[in-house]
Length: 150
Image 1: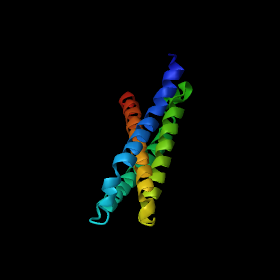
Image 2: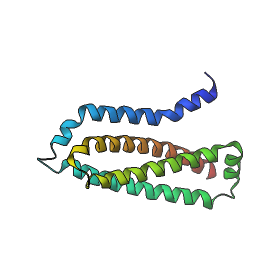
Image 3: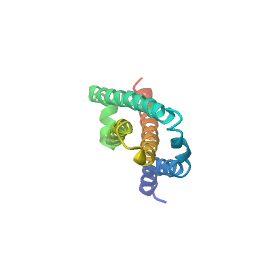
């Protein structure tokens, strides 16, 4: 297996894991949504998830501004020359976009008809797992940058 094939497969791992979690929720998570009539549990979960997604989105926007602030450093110049800077920025913007879509989906749960909640919750599970995996990936890349810079 060539290096580029391995890299392409590695890029798909967050998407595949998120898709598996969403399918599992679609199959087994309907019982959780039936509790909607008895308690406010699903809506409380969505409120908590929206708060976390908003906070992470704010941190990622701060990380992008931090990256632009240290553009003149030798490490960033080296990262740009070998393509790692583009990868980091690409993953960061993908995570920001998925977190923004997750926030919109969380807000839609309060406006949507109960009939469509299962589909929307499945999308929210997919987006939250996908965003979480991207944030972990970004965190490991930023850790490497700050270890080298210090």
